[in-house]
Amino acid sequence: MYAEITGWGKCMPPSILTNDQIATVVDTSDEWIHSRSGIRERRVSHVAPSQLAAIAAQRALAAARMDPKDLDMVILATCSPDTLIPSAAAACQLAIGATNAGVFDLNAGCTGFLYGLSVATSMIKAGDHKRILVIGAERITWYLNWRHRETAVLFGDGAGAVVLEASENPVGLLASKLTCDSGAAEALKLPYFGTAADRFQTDYRQMTIQFDGREIFRRAVKGMQEASEYVLNKTGVSKEQVDLMVPHQANIRIIEALGKFMGMPEEKVMVNIGSYGNTSAATIPVALTEALESGRVKPHSTVLLAAFGAGLTCGAGLLRWGDRVQALGQSDAELPPCDQSALEILAPAIKASVAG
Image (cartoon, rainbow, N blue to C red; front, side, top):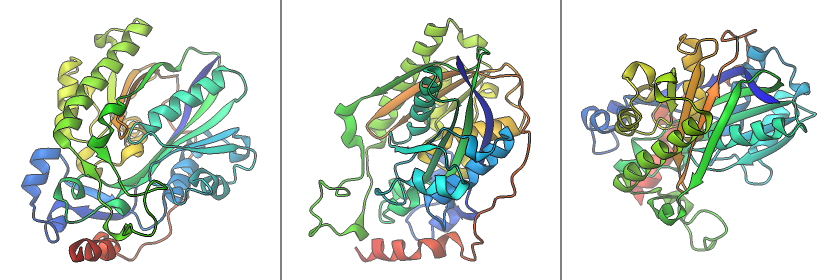
């Protein structure tokens, strides 16, 4: 039994935050940000991650022409859930009407969607589940400290989703490799947030993402390369046989370095970081959706996925696409209207950061 991707969708918040707008509150410039990251703009959400997830999910279900009541499981990869209790997946299930599905959140940082895809594939192969929705949804801008240029310019919000269905055809995720380099966990961390913090001493208005860019770059490229080579060797697929690589969209330099080490020409590497920044667990499903929408995924394409994230988690997966690359239907689901600009949404956080 295999797990075929039969539906896909994304949801990007309408409010756009450009580099020039960030430069009005942070000591930076469009040239500084773009030259180091490849980012021109990102989206800022006015709603909770579960709402982003629900819209992406409804679009993926429409693409698969599937009734949400037919879902057996909803897996939501996120490190920025609406609430810890209950899970954001539970809120998403309610919003889309997947009343017969089990649900859970999965936190593996930016590698979360790839972890979720691997777990869902295994559940279907085991025979206990036939239809699973896997979502990556994040509102990372909620965490940002606007005094810290190194992180404030990198992240954005969004969601992407895929529907997996049991199939006898040898398609879907053929192999995956999931790892965690926990000895380097301090390189990317949100400290003082959780039950390890002193709830009576911590000022949550001053949250700061701990970020060692140089260490992350080194370990990310090495980790994704090794995981990618593992899944290729396991499946007997050569680098030349890969039709498209969809890497985590964290930094254009990391993407370029990985492409070089994997011997992938530019036309075989999916890049959309310029428009969205790093949306953590949402980057791969959003990029995969856009690759399908732009015709870069063909019937029977071989697609290599690679990601890394906080933990430091890392992973790769090799997809064999099925016959269909066109959506069977369209959803009219939309986010609630937003009458605020990105800077207006972020104004309280910016004020608190500057005051700190």
